[in-house]
Image (cartoon, chains in turn purple, blue):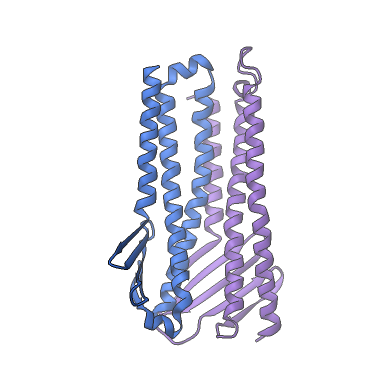
Length: 177
Length: 170
């Protein structure tokens, strides 16, 4: 195994490991007590999050703690009146997180591919006199393809984030507790 | 040449098997005497959703199963205020199942392309000495990245289904 290949292997493993834990820590489910189940979501990009406490086999309504940026987090009990806003916030945030997962994933792939091309530049850029432009052409094509994919996910992420923000402000104006 | 053609045909056949498995293992639909039974699964998170629609008397029954248990609801209960929950549950299980099948598709694609490259290693190396090396290194970078995103999507969707289940249990 060549030194170059080992460097690439370690870098890929470390980057993907970090990506996995970063994405995994954005959502969690745990049992707080026998009767309470907690569902959490965190969007690092727009700094929005919610925590939902579901009271199992009890009539107590679900409790939501929403936070956005530096604004102090607020807790709401789910009622018939505010359910729609809470669900809009949840849907918006979930969609934003999902799209951002794609963006972070593709961005990591771009960085790793770039690193790989640089590491193996002799093979990619100028393999030998017979195939001088092949690698360069494939490199440009991949870069364009990845950028298109990232853009494809950035836009819906921003729209979803705006939807969640709208729902949050509607909730604060109409259902302040 | 024969080896190349055979390996490509084998690769295509293997991919067709993976595609068929991905499409049939996560959801099925059958219709018997006017009753439509649809099922969706997410094997990773032990989720399943079954919907029985009787077109003769327009009734619907659905079942949601998670690792916490199974809940069964009929239309009469649905009318009592849980109508939005069936689509929520279906949506979550469907998304988790879709992610799982996409994961298998990518894994199959990776296995097939790698096999074709390795089987025809000498031929490709003759054409371009670096092609096999480049592809063998690039494919994992590209596919593992996508798979991580898919695993996370499935995990979030399964949490959503579990939440619906717990809310319904009330």
